[in-house]
Image (cartoon, rainbow, N blue to C red):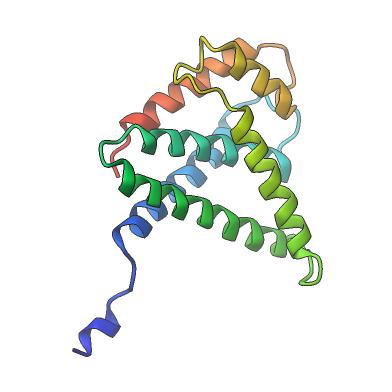
Length: 163
């Protein structure tokens, strides 16, 4: 009976969401470091990339067979994202009195990004995705087709990623 207190109380959705969120963070970090087409590499760039990859994983999860289960995983993913936003803003020096305002503004940006993200899973051939990239103001040159191809390949990798 006491053994239950030694086990970490996480359900399966939380475990999968944590693994996926760690994958999102590592992919976005390496994506920023390996590519030179970003205007600047700062918190905004990191936020936009994590948002794009998070949306891709949310989409990937909706393609899974057990839709009801993966809706719960998506809910946990967004919760982890919001928690991470809170923690990273605190590390940047935002105080307790105004942290809620900052988190709320970033969460609004994220949901706005979801609403603008194209519904077609082939991002490379999707003109809406290219417009989406222009909306983020991340890319320094006009080679949006090349960048959309890179994101499309990454999305294909995410679809094939096993939890």
